Image (tube, rainbow, N blue to C red; front, side, top):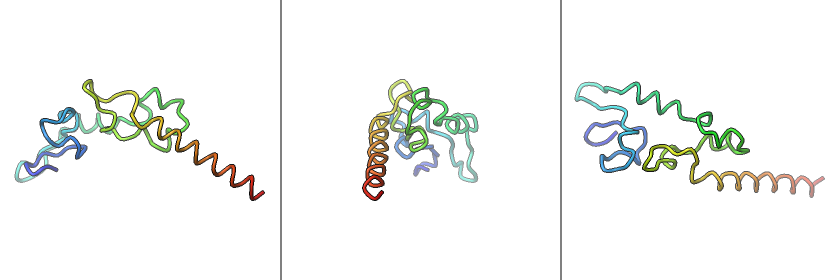
Length: 107
């Protein structure tokens, strides 16, 4: 929630000058109660690992769950491919290899 009473789905998009602000603005406090844009809120809630085709074959999809939506934002909206995808896959791969190798040493 911003000092002006606006409610956003992400603190990184809490100012009108932020690209993506309109995408993440989900409500407003009117002085008495919160008024939410239920359609926008529900559309954000639907964006998960099942929405991105890249995730459908990714080994790390359940580790990152599609990643942070704010990291996927670009000038066209929410991107199909996130900037942390490769990093997440490599970290998972490294962790699996470390576990397998430690089990091989301990027998």
